[in-house]
Length: 256
Image: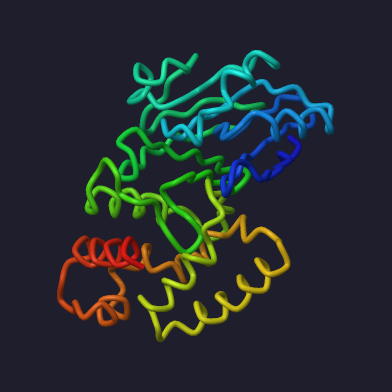
């Protein structure tokens, strides 16, 4: 079985659209559809036919391009059961713990509510790929709009439990702002300080900071390390529960 080809595209002001392509079968999926134009252009340039769209959550900047993509390519849309009625866009629905086939690869559905209540992430174990959209960002996590901080913390722990060599694709290019906040939440982390310098260089050169790896995030992302004594101490909350510390880190980032 051939490895999947991954193409990351800029969309809207700071979104990513991600195409996954199986060279043997020709099947191509888009992870979310922030806007149609860049996806259509990339498909045409590569001669790919879009067979699937995998939706992570209902926010407009992740689904806005679906109607045009379906019209142009007839792609089947798979999305979370929790927002099927609200969006009216899905041909197939999925829930936590389910898996489905994409070109011979098993795609695992992991419910990761917090940012929204319907949010799911997609994990392809045999390719070490995680598509975490707006739950887990490089050096950050999504704002908690519909859920609660404890809910988001539990969702992040699900993703943190995956192998370190998992390649993580996220929904937005927020890494520089996240990094500048992260060093205030974890000031003694030498790996984080070094990563900030690398990210500043990448962004100054107009290069993307993603994908990242889960191992790097576990070592440097304060939102994944709310149960680390160093983060608790930096928050002035030694002895507090990880959920309480996570809530404080998230609140400080919201004000940053």
